[in-house]
Image (cartoon, rainbow, N blue to C red):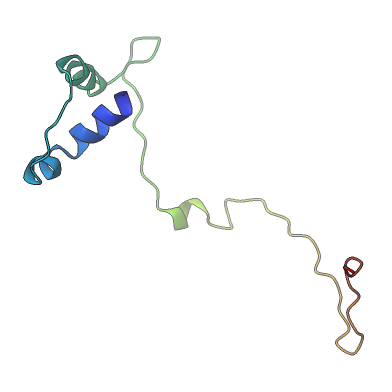
Length: 88
């Protein structure tokens, strides 16, 4: 039920405005508060920050080593061959 509780808490304002009753136990709310506390690494130092990167920047061709397969050479005057036998 944790997912259900999480969604109810996430949309608490909307559900309350629609007149729906929330059934989130106090123990789950306490657990959610613990999630907000920053975690520390095993050495006890601060955790590192993660920068958000736009999808365009993350997938730039300069950063990726992608080799595309060679395109097959097609003669426009030659009919295409079927890739499999026709069904009967």
